[in-house]
Image (cartoon, rainbow, N blue to C red):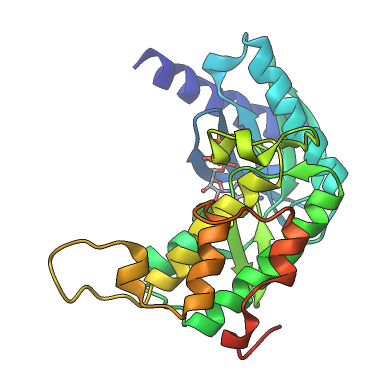
Length: 262
Ligand SMILES: Nc1ncnc2c1ncn2[C@@H]1O[C@H](COP(=O)(O)OP(=O)(O)OP(=O)(O)O)[C@@H](O)[C@H]1O
């Protein structure tokens, strides 16, 4: 309750800061995560929309979390890719670090599947995953791993993918051996992103699945995918031999099942 009150108080600080010190106008709160709060704002001159993300008030004295927040900003600045928001500015409001970035006016895959009921065929799912892997190859070549490639963090707009929320991203540690990773989600190398991409692909494929029996079965039994696709997903999910890099995962995609390989 107390932390909720602290956050509400900071909403006011954010609004006052924007009003008194910037050319931006507050529009609404976009969401509250475990570490940060994101607001939608608009530039009064251009009417372009942006996102202001700040640390949560309750974390402001935690040095490690401040460093983590600063790393998120630093990585976003280093990435500099069109399908990742650019950092416009950064600073502090009442001792709370914040940054302003591009607003991606797209639809997340979470919204597409669970809110809007979109479905993705096998060939569409593979083509979209190919686009995601192409992005991830570039990211890894820049020495960065996202580590949170979940459906709410992947957006699309005009058939183009966008990746947001680099709150868990890190620099790649080249010395990690794939055989000794016990939590693939948090691995500081390509394994983490590939593992999330395996789950991402399964979310897309499950969008067309309607259960015919009550009993839950494994995804291999439920989805009835062609054998090379099953084998491919198993490798992403570390149920088979791990890929040595995102580049290898991209080059070995079973694209014979994707008719439209954008
Ligand atoms: N650049 C952006 N463009 C469009 N929407 C965004 C952007 N950044 C964040 N959002 C939206 O704002 C909300 C909160 O984003 P945030 O990055 O804070 O994620 P989170 O996972 O909730 O936070 P945390 O990193 O603290 O766990 C999400 O709904 C996200 O879709």
